Length: 190
Ligand SMILES: CC(C)(COP(=O)(O)OP(=O)(O)OC[C@H]1O[C@@H](n2cnc3c(N)ncnc32)[C@H](O)[C@@H]1OP(=O)(O)O)[C@@H](O)C(=O)NCCC(=O)NCCS
Image 1 (cartoon, helix red, strand yellow):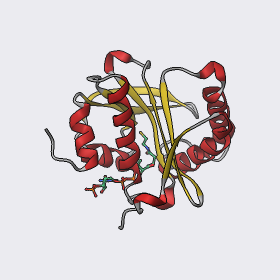
Image 2 (image 1 turned 120 degrees about the vertical axis):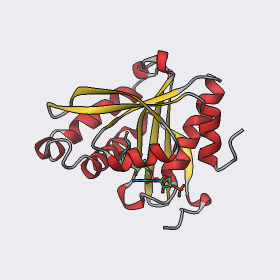
Image 3 (image 1 turned 90 degrees about the vertical axis):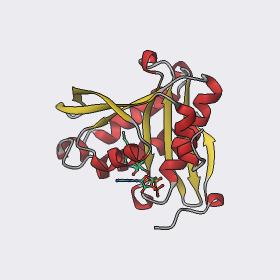
């Protein structure tokens, strides 16, 4: 598949007016990626209102923690977003809490670019920090993406998820974010 042309995507930080758009993409992405993992009753029901509440809260003035919420916009609107939190389990470094690309443009290089922007931002904010995330064990597609960039799986935990189900998640860690950034941008590792 051909990557999206670089100049077809613009990146910008989210502001308070972006909650509805981010929640809509987040909902569509979960419906696509988590079908068969989270209950249909949740994916077809409460998820939309729940995601909207989450993003309104996160983008409100009181929700401003140390974090990056970066949007990727195409001519047809929001194409993806990434959210990186600095103070969520900081003993593991920064937490990549969300990385979502619009389902109809998966596999065209945007996930890599968003991940690269997040790694670049982390290096500017907290040089030397590692990066970690949790991914559902059953989310084979996302795990394929994270494996491609050589994340280490360091833990497995059963967690109670939205929708009321207990699901196994894996913690991925990149201890050397400079090396990760090089991999993401295609530069040879130092
Ligand atoms: C995971 C996700 C962000 C990846 O973004 P994407 O734009 O589809 O991925 P890219 O096109 O940037 O892929 C980058 C590289 O990863 C590889 N890759 C992507 N998906 C893969 C998969 N399922 N298996 C193996 N490799 C994969 C690509 O082949 C590409 O490798 P290359 O550089 O050698 O060509 C996207 O598919 C997504 O939004 N998924 C649903 C939401 C989700 O599960 N998010 C993660 C929650 S923890």
